[in-house]
Image 1 (cartoon, rainbow, N blue to C red):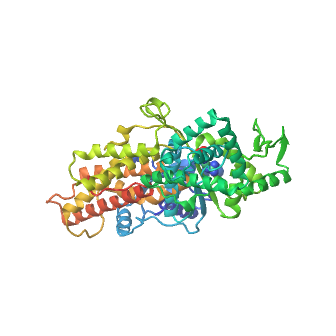
Image 2 (image 1 turned 90 degrees about the vertical axis):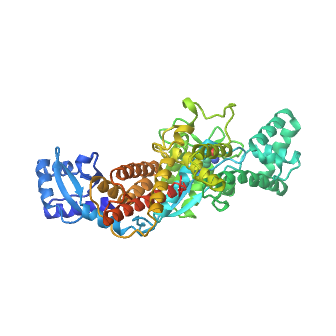
Image 3 (image 1 turned 90 degrees about the horizontal axis):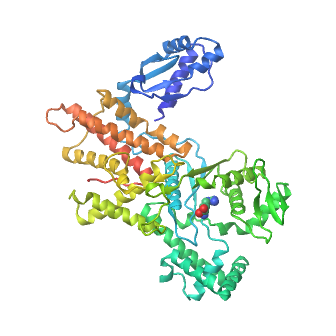
Length: 566
Ligand code: ARG
């Protein structure tokens, strides 16, 4: 339910009835419980326009606000805020109304936007690293979220599968006489290193590698076949990681850098024609206002660059995919690159003016002490090893609880371990760097996935103990129930905000609030005690199961599984 929209309509009506003109009405969450549930802060602005005292205007507005339905009480506060309290009866009705709703009260957009989400984007020559982990997790959540809200999402995995290093890898693949499915490629990092050693030690090998670059680029069949087998094997590694992570990327979502190859000359042509680029020191360059260095789009030897491919991709996403919004979930350190290609694409009309281009940047994941993330031995950790370790550690965390069979334990450990890694990543504001900390992410307390999974399991255990049908309405009886019900109804506003701002942590903070208030509610209002009136018991049970539904849906948008018992 869109609570803020409903409230702004009520305020709009009040203003109309009070004969006050206003253009946009913004409702915000109250910052403290004593300020009510919501606040209308727009009076100051109105007062300036009307040249009147804000408190006086606020008083007039308050007199005209309808307090017979959704709103219980309004009050003028401070220099001219209007504090708003919602009605318990209204909260009771609205929460009861969504008890059987699989979307837990969250509506869908009326007109779907086409949103391209570009995420993961690993480079085929190398192992996926922690930066790709963040991109995969954040991008996948954003995609799931937008889809849930009814948008049409087109996932694009812009893998790096083109470039001079592939000549070297193919030469090595051939030297090893392997078809890309054998042991050698199990460890890509090693394969790359070995190829590099050969490249550095043998002039013959290096020449062959250079030859291969030219051959791949000119479409030589034999080379392309070898190259393809390398990409297949490499992508297979990434897919193992996606599977472990519950990331929904398939081969269909891959539109690799190489896909744009034959569109690159056209990109250069367009930019030249429109006078956006010019030749400088032999290279084709774009000089953007305010930038110190030019953006090279074609090197002197004819080679193209990362930016050229991204321009072709922008053009494709506008003209062919017909995107309304394009989100790039890529390391914040590429901010400059995206700012530049977005500007050029719009200048050259490769992308329509009204298409939203967004770089969804994220910070760096770091090891203990804020140092670059390294294994104990000092190497770069492989993502799949990291995820396996998460599952092992999770197993350790719940081992002594002794509520699971061996088979269950594995499934539960996976849900907890992978959930912990994902949640830790999603719960910090995405632009910040963050420190990877096993103990913190696998804690039962605090803003962790385990805290949410535990609360969910706890509610399931209450329902199991009750062991009978749960019927009847929710009747909000006290302040803690009021807070819990209101939070549950805020689900749609929360998801909408997270989708607009592309901020998964908006969802995790919300879930943390929900669970924290639920725990308080459970402590103050016992559910299964014998001496509780049947109606109250049912209302509390209903509120608890609705909480569980919100936790489950919220976690599923984050790509995290719930657990029936912990
Ligand atoms: N392969 C790139 C990297 O590892 C990420 C690709 C991001 N997407 C894009 N359209 N540039 O840095």
